[in-house]
Image (tube, rainbow, N blue to C red; front, side, top):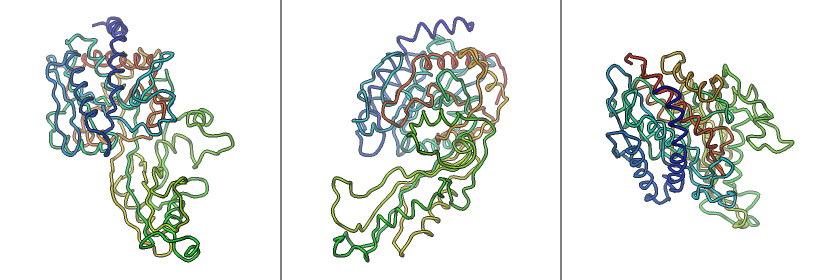
Length: 450
């Protein structure tokens, strides 16, 4: 197919593409504990049907130990052509506070060329990018195709890593496309060359056998919540820099958004300062970040006059590509133990970790992807980092060191992923699908082996 034929096929297929995305977003496939498993399995079944309809001859669900099934599909490579692995995930983050959503999170709504709904961007847009790009070829693919769509990336993505290590031949490919990132802004094409890793844990502080009356005992009885707050605030200095020994800041060679653009995207209130030192690119893509993502303490509405006996927090660490996730866990937990006041009892649990990733540019797949992005978006792409983590990427890099790994997608920094009112711009989705189809055709002209 010529580039013009590919572009026309993608454009003509957009009504079906939007409907496919709507059907997928309507399924509340939250793979977190405490949520129904049925919708997650329903989403897996729909992904399986969509891949079959895209022309792939071999499609099946694969059990993943301790997780939800992955959907795997493949088509053989034409003689002399390379093979490309396409990745995305069909599970989504919980919706959170429904009162903050302008439209129901699992009733996808299209307005002014934008689809709103949980997972519309992260990462059901990635699933649909693969489906629609493949559909453009009517079953006559220019490369060998393998597709793996994960079912629990948002909660326990590291569980797919063990599967990758145990089944290398199943996923072996010359190039691998991870459609779970996006552009800094709509219409600003980018390839992600750096991913931060991630680690998380729960810290618990105990001080008393049980909560006691704050009037009778307050002032002498050690408050578990007060102790935990002192420990957590010690993680950063007054400027907001991480102050844990061993977690040193890094530098990123490119540029991020300007401060004002970042403030607008993040919704930083007037008069509130950004935190940390160094450039935005350094802070967002090449340095450690520590965030308290949850607290188990009495709510304000349920508060009673008591000194707390126990308090818990969930802590997340973002780790630069050059860092070690397990070492960062050790550094942070050791620091919290060191700064714990009053001899309180501290324990840690529910650990997760995933490594970061740094891409090496200049290979044939990267070059083909850059050409495809430039044609689809009408401007040359740039290389950016991502502060988020994709646990599978580092595992693929370790398992297949000669394969080129490419990261792009239909998300953008304003897509509100993991937040209320998540959305994807449908024109951005069309351009991303066009990019992928053009890339597959271009890369199919390269005859080599990884």
